[in-house]
Length: 151
Image (cartoon, rainbow, N blue to C red; front, side, top):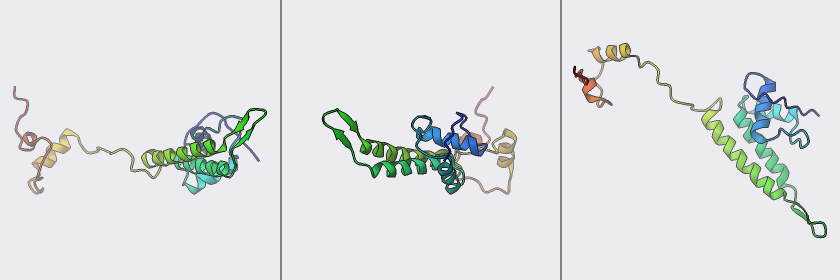
């Protein structure tokens, strides 16, 4: 089983996507490895290589892993293992990554694209006599070709 982290998160290759998923779920400590490379590759394949959605799946998987373990307290040595807290943290992380996938991921709605708003295009559209007149406009004066900045 392989575990690698080069510290180069990105979206351009399998290795950088794997590093991105590791970074997003906090699995970057070589002394506390949580997920194998093959598991992250599986998550990426299930999510059409969306790193945020893959991180959500990874966190959900880790929550399930820690949900199976019980909290342990050894009275005489004051040692405690609180797996339920890890389970809750990974569950919340999964929800956060799912929201980020919806906003930034490959299948997200993304940011609005305000294309086609050059001055010449606006003028052309406004002067088109065959175009249906809009019921409203952001700048009513500009729609009516009134000079809003008289000299």
